Amino acid sequence: MIAETLKNAEEMMDRSIEAAREDFASVRTGRANPGLYSKVLVDYYGAPTPLQQLAQFATPDARTLLITPFDVSALRSIEKALSDSEIGANPSNDGKVIRVVMPELTEERRKEYVKLVRGKAEDARVSVRNARRKAKEAVDKMVKDKDSEVSEDEGARAEKELDAKTKLHIEKIDEMLKSKESELLSV
Image (cartoon, helix red, strand yellow):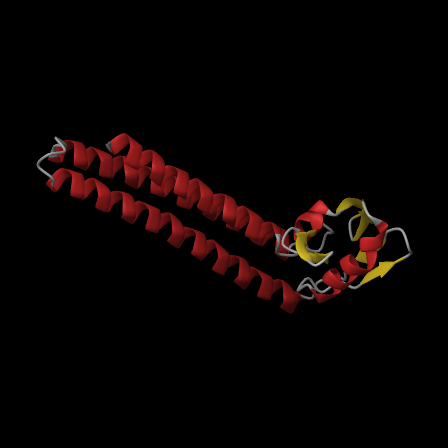
């Protein structure tokens, strides 16, 4: 029973880290990266569809991204979705592919992105702590329940293990944050 609770908590923490990784990938650096467009939705025949399901990406150089739609009729919809996105790059279309040239980031914009990434990291930490809190409440309830046959020692051991997992996951988030900050601030 305790093992299952700890396993569920760890899965929730892993999902928090994965969500943070995706959020970090969607924050723009000076380089062209297909991950920037992972959250862009295109109106494809009336249905919002993720851009990565509609096109192939290529990066011929550090600041250029080529987007080749699988269906050429979706070219205009993709271009509109790219223009409306928060990424700040202007797409150009030659009838077959869309070329996106990423502008250089200013120092001020880089600092704004660092603040944004720190906020996303804090959200991930809060999510990990919430998973810990839920699991701790479940373990405490098992210890108090006379029918569950869970001793206070087992509860204390489970809490120590839960704290170790929480610390490990928060350290992973901090490492990802440090890496993304250095990537953002390097020119």
